[in-house]
Image (cartoon, rainbow, N blue to C red; front, side):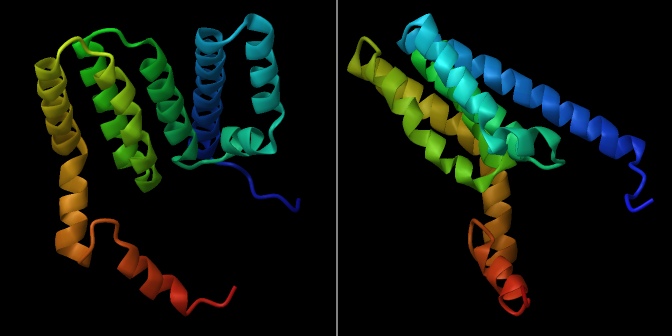
Length: 168
């Protein structure tokens, strides 16, 4: 009687969040297999599964699990991409992550590895330009909106004003 009854929305959202975290574990396993041996990949998977943060993300209703999945997919694609199209697809994943969470900006340097592996200098320039257009068209409008509405692209001024006076 101390606990509030969960709504169907909360239950289905938590289920979705745990499903997304399961895909994160699979992507980490696949990424570890690309760069190492199966025993090391298993150790990476066990360490991630045993992390309290993973359990917290799997049971929470937030955008953190989606960001975790997109970041894991981005790293996996960085390790396995072989073509210009794959690099452009990777930029779309980064753009979706940028809309999900502002801290996804740390994923931008992962585009450098596939670009560096391209055959010619001109191919690098063309693909980098297309990747920039994809990221700008998918996520750029949100940061432009923040700049117009709040005066900075991340909206941190409003965040500081709102939470500066709160007593914790």
